[in-house]
Length: 480
Image (cartoon, rainbow, N blue to C red):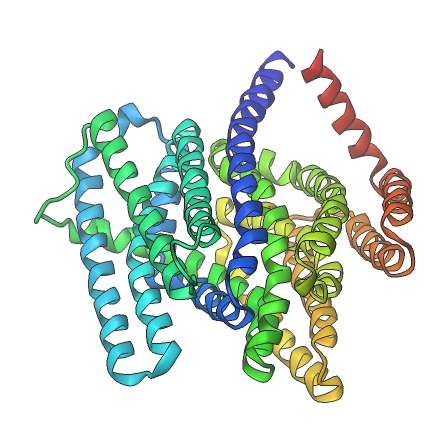
């Protein structure tokens, strides 16, 4: 019991470290999320969000390499790290990403026109920087260097604040007349370049790794791709599924409409950033568990996640108040935000609990197959919704249904494969999501907040009583 308590304490200590740094990052993202739409024209903000939309596909262009690094080195002690091998892997990877980036930028310059030329050149630059930063981030996770991840998050928070604060001051004192999405893209990309150099410096000084070499171990590189490619493909199918509604809105509606719809996702990302701390810390711990323990704890991990995420939906109420009084031109976004927000619980349950369990048990092909099926069903659902209603609200509701279908396919498949008989989560998700939609639609902010909190407690006790009590016991133990 004492050993379990130590493991839980260690996990929660690392989790709190990451959550604290993500909290700082969240504050900066709130700052950016609220102020950027104020200093950009709606059309410029829409162009920035189009850039961000296509940037979500950048991680496909590492072809599984960084995922392979995470799995191979997950839970490894840094003292046993083969530094020469790691140097070869990094040298090959950065060469690969530079070549891909050059191809994207060259194609954009000659094949595209107008804003899309600018956007995709920026995407090309972002791809190489982001994927190399992700390499270091995943390596830090794998080696359980959560303090380093936390410091990098804090540095990024400072850069985010600088990127929005300086233009705001310049505009206020009429040092510049306007600030465009192109200006912000330059600042945004510069921030990631700085983060990249911080990672390189940190690993070079502390781990004494020489990062650049002309020697490549072909067998080791191929092995990394073999491990990581199915994971990346599965992740990208998930990514496409999550962005389908955004893609439909960007294709079939005006840039201004897309800006307002995408802004609701901007708000959702504020909620998700804290939750992602769990995923950052979780995998190395899961990777150290034996298969039997991992499968045995699946239902508990899922229940804890759902209880936690549905509690975070209360973030809707302060965000609604802020938007109403500070960004009234984006008030329409609140309607989309209200519909989409419960999807956070489903999304994060898939990407943190389900995905990591499939990854550790080596069953990514099954996860991939289920992801392809859910993607095809989602496409049909979005096409039908658009053709029948021609409404952005219809697409928003379709996204909730699509996410639940995806969750059901992945979760049921894992439970069936491992004979885990418990399906309370499905009823719980449907009821809490529906209740949130109902109270936020009918009642004002304060009444809705009180009713949702009461409904959350009641439904959590009704369907997840065992794990709710267990969570409270763990919290009391840690506090005392």
